[in-house]
Length: 490
Picture 1 (cartoon, rainbow, N blue to C red):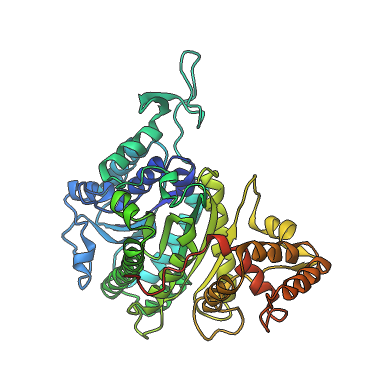
Picture 2 (picture 1 turned 135 degrees about the vertical axis):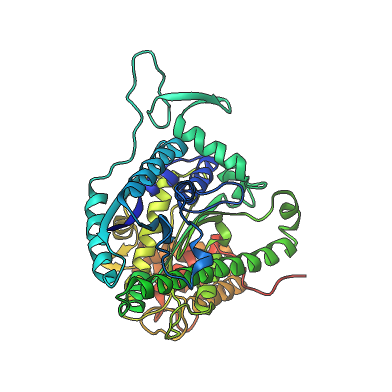
């Protein structure tokens, strides 16, 4: 009997996003990517162990082939932070797994890996085996903890940031082994002129905001399951899963490249940013890019517009599905100061993405939600909005917004973009801030602000009362929104 196994990472968010050092975040994300994938300079950790066992790891160049019974170990497919492997015997499974877990600890000192397996003959039991494998993986993940270095002894020093035992004096500070490994990896891949979060700030003193963008494909697991539901035999299911996984990876990768290209064309030709581009490059760092999941950090003023570019590019990508159905995704965006605790900012971005996904369940399409954090500690997104964006029991905001055109349930983001342009063209910023503050204070103050503005020749749009929440969203983001979808300036 053979072994069908799955390896899945545990605690990745804490590992990648816990630090307020961009160098560590970038290094951690590259290390996580290299667990299952080859990089430009190094072989992936699992592919390396597969090859050492005489197996085959290059599944993307074998998408039209089924499993080879003469190969002792073979990656079926990987993506989304996990990998599926077929083993012809238990001894090879044990040897590869032990070697892989050992190398993961040596490379990261902090990432946990859950492993599940099922015995199989690799015949006509794919669907049943896969279901059993997923049930066992859920149990394994529930009992898998991240590796933790041995506790301190009286003669050792602790890291001031993590509390773990230090092992290095590196770049002017004592640090634990995991932090050191992250920074070493960052050095290997480089980040251009962007070294830390402060380097993403375009104009210090005017706007010190950065944007954390988290994008996730809609219902990808369900879509994939539906695509292969009739494939019972491994010889049919494996090529189908490989082709589909590769097509999804390609569609999202091309979408990211397209959005990045539009951003770069706008930024490097804009007279306000051209010189900075030549010195430091584009103010964007891609932390996670794995299948339909991506996390990027952008200079704050471009965050919302760049996220909308990503979602629109995903919708326009070639469909990986047999029925030609459109790809869709949702985005959550946190806008915060560059020194704000990054793990908290990322958590809010994840919660915004989850909020954006809610309307997609009844009206399929792409949506975006966002949150501006000015200062101070925050709890969860729901508490922020209940405490700061509710007046007389009613919400002040219209979020989430629909990127997909023609969806009536949620306001269209194209309306948000136009509202930004219209108000900026006709109102001074000081008066727009007064209007936003009045809307958030009370209906009486809002009415007084209306009257005062009109008396000075600043008439409100005809649809203001009807779209009060939409205008509130527009007003709140007025200082941290730059439309990079506009025609590139000469």
